[in-house]
Length: 165
Figure 1 (cartoon, rainbow, N blue to C red):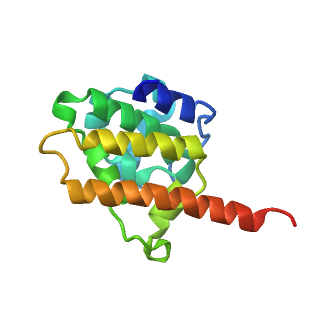
Figure 2 (spheres, rainbow, N blue to C red):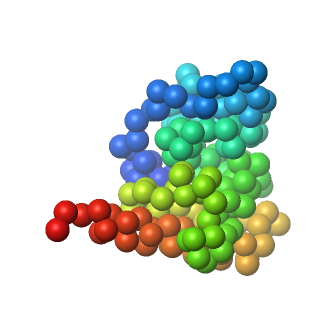
Figure 3 (tube, rainbow, N blue to C red):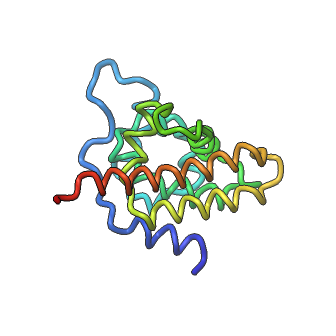
């Protein structure tokens, strides 16, 4: 299975969220970028859309973030020279401490609780970023990969804690 198919299969169960951003006035530029996505399914979003609305990454509520996440992964693979601001932001978000208690609320709310196949698709994507010349340094990609692995393990740990005895 190629990576695009892996991403599609992993995130296929995700439903479009009813709310993309926190309600507030005035609407921020980041929220305006995020609201552009309201009429679009993640499968219909290309790299050009992310280039025109990169700040959506920071404004999405957790459910919206996860719904549109596969579009970032795929768009980065299709972007010229693999360069995409949203993909850079994602790698930056994943380039974290190896200790979950050091993670901020942004990463915890958005990336703890995914399905195992989603984590595997993200890890496979991070590995492909290693082949994109001049975009990310290898140390950052290694930490990002390890963070996704830790997110998967933390999710499993939390699910086991919540299982009825």
